[in-house]
Image 1 (tube, helix red, strand yellow):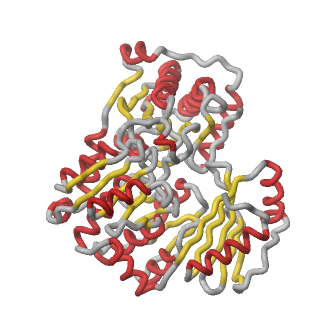
Image 2 (cartoon, rainbow, N blue to C red):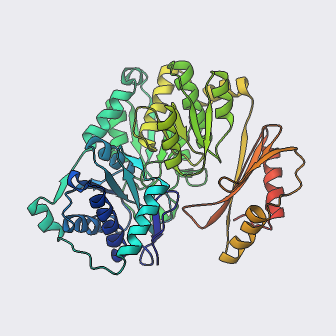
Image 3 (cartoon, rainbow, N blue to C red):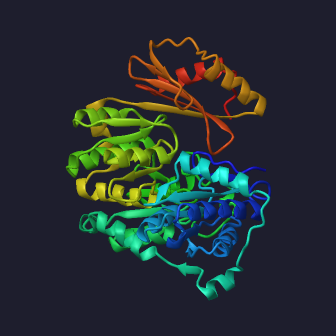
Length: 474
């Protein structure tokens, strides 16, 4: 099975595409690319999450780097992906990788590649790696056994957790949080956020409980993605113990899910909107926002009100971080729960975002629900409907032909302003609503997102798209 990068790195089913041979081939290709770019002497960084074979795959990759004569730092503990990105930046390395499949089902594993500054590798980099892979497919790959690599200094185990945690502590108002005695419950979803997030919040004198903290490579039998369906346990804990906030992170801790003090799930769109509004109004920051094509347009309304701009980019955080670097934007994020803020790493970080939300509650003295109500009273309501559909290869070809080749659309009741095919098919309505259909770059799914002024409208438009494409909602 070939190695192809999607919107969030390379991911494959364990034992099918995710094998020792493929991990070593990808690493060898990246090592050769580093040598050709004269970046090999600066070294390389690898971290890993709690998935099955993540630690072993890290060793396989490190052995290849050592065999190529490239000094390889290995984070010698289960590490959040944001920590790996931070470490690439902190040690000023040209490249790094995290062994993770993020929020994918437990049968998957994969690799995310990062470039200088700790940014997600963009499409030019990943395509180049794929070209190197094709050239090296039948070559013998030299390796240095892991223990020998450690003994000879080609492999260097490190633990950069303290600098990472300290960077977040310096970035937020810890004094404000300390003064509030907030009761917080964390749900790492059997993933890797506990140590960093618990350390930060306890340092801020929060009362912290943790659920689902042990290692479980099957993630408790559920998807390690923080959404309304998977956070019932967190929701129950918040309600039963009267917590101020419940915080969940996905398997590698780059995405965030929130349960508010009322026990309600806070959609990632709302989290992104809350933080942008907070940074502009309450902290006095200035700058644009960046969102992907399937994320709320409420960000645009806030940006416009403050004399700023909101940029729209394709799905994939590499596009968000790239546009943020280009424009100096304050915040960038996506409706799936990933975001980052100017001055931190140039990639999504659920740990930093969670800490900033806690600071927001402490600084404003207001609950999440109260602050969001202030926003909707000012800018109106923006309600989103999201649906996922499984498909066969034949179905994908049929849907692609309808939407992307024939460019056919349902007959909507709303007047269409324009249609974009930059990433899937997105229809913009004159009343400000929109609907998009696009294939996921990380999972075998077709996704439909629709945002309108009411949930009833959003569901009706989504249903019309669903019926037109002859889809069955899973």
